[in-house]
Length: 376
Image (tube, rainbow, N blue to C red; front, side):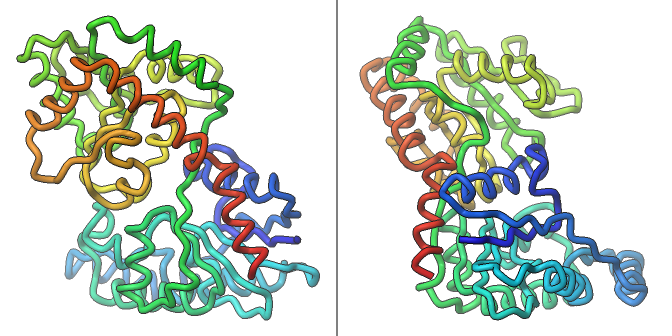
């Protein structure tokens, strides 16, 4: 099977878009697909769109995404059409925009983590959009959904939006979680030993997220303080934020840690190995891959019921998700219960690891995607 893999960014750079472009392509390749890369698509904003974008910002204080216009989508489509090999079986894109206006008799597929409609008012960059930008974004999204023969989303939240917000045929919408973007050779015996080493009365919490506010960093500190007030010896390790944070003395901000370096990988491995819980009470997220990575260490994840989180974290299987209205005490009580019941904690940790092995890895994603593509 020959797949033309089309993307605006680099599909061969493991560090681009959190590694997703790279890992998705490699997952398909591992299942026997022959990949023809049509990446680094280029398009230029025309003067009219530029003028309208600036006008909306200055006079209405509204934003218009520079990359989500019909002019840009047409340029992407034309470039793909020129570079598309005649013997291509499937056109595959890790995003909807490149294939929104693509004209070809080949079967078309895309795989992403959200719809445009689901993002409006959800992430900061989608909260002050001009009415024109919303209308155009929705029109392009609908074109992509109608134009493609098969659509993969990384969460039920995104899939439901495609069906409910755009009237997409449910038969061609599939849910396939992203995999962990790390190498993992751990076995169940390794995870059991990791768990055994942690049953020492300590409670190490790990938070990973660059966007401190959106990812719920302040709530994570409050949860740790709540545990501290209950006489639980707590340590909170924080990875990601580049800014200075006012933190209690039992917390440490390690800043950004790069997976590009051996030292960075070693440090992240140690933090995940020594943590008792991965705590990320995020307020808005499409599909945090870091939950998959935590599960590969047998590390239970704790988060909120928002966006695509509940597709990755299954309550009492890989961790627990809480309502947006939950208090720090609610989180602390859950953590305390598991610390006081080591057998339950071990079962949850092993369950998280098993879910990683069965569902939350790129081999599993690749097999599922290719089985649907083969049917197509």
